Length: 355
Image 1 (tube, one colour):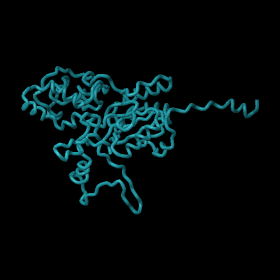
Image 2 (cartoon, helix red, strand yellow):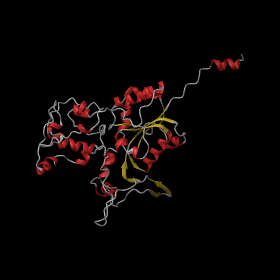
Image 3 (cartoon, helix red, strand yellow):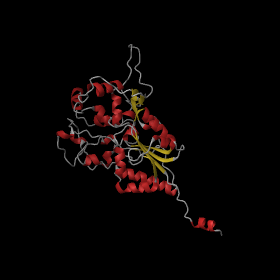
Image 4 (cartoon, helix red, strand yellow):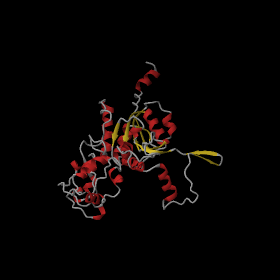
């Protein structure tokens, strides 16, 4: 055997390429990014099993790095954040092309979450408040952001701000969903561990559309508090009473979204005397989280007198923000009308496109 052939035969075999992982945020607060780090030392297992090729919030990657990849080159993309503007849309479509598996990661991507609460108003009303009327705004010249602005001879561009906030699957095809605001760390690791196991051992992927990192029941089913389904004469905000630590918060008149929220969070909020806000989204076989909660309340209001019922319900501050805090983009209600009938015969029209 020649010396060169002998040397080649003794060289170690090249390491198999690791699957590629991308993480991205669109319209969101960044909590989902932090939640990934909440898996603590297991982040080292993620790095050992994946080649992280895009994670702008944590590492110095550029959009052009993703654009240069082959379609389908990324194995898994965890995409968090709602779609609020043109840039969000572009990145969603780009990462959809480049990723074999695209996951709507966190409530903003799954259902719109807090950004989608602006669907209860309009773009104009939003800009009026933020740039003109807010007590914290100092804008005597009434300047508003422009898509293109000339500065020192250069064109500066901003993404176009949409009238309507969308969930990720209202823009691109989504393979799986991981709910939560943010998803719980133990659930994030359970999802990643499952993916690692699937990739290492050639196991089949879950059915498309599966909700990962969550259960099949409601928060009430995993809540340790005792529920007696008492009738309610008055609603209280959490700071207005000291609740019994063992009894159901809803029974005590505190609006708790547990009956209309998917389980999987270990009922962590109710366990520490804070009502469920609904961040894990609507439970299985439900179409509208707010409608489901309204239905649940209808069975516990202690009155049949319309005026008294109205008075009891007046104790719920900000019904839209309470019932649809995390799910307005996917709700039947959807958004506020952006066009009004010009004549009594005209039908109000919802905006047909998101922009």
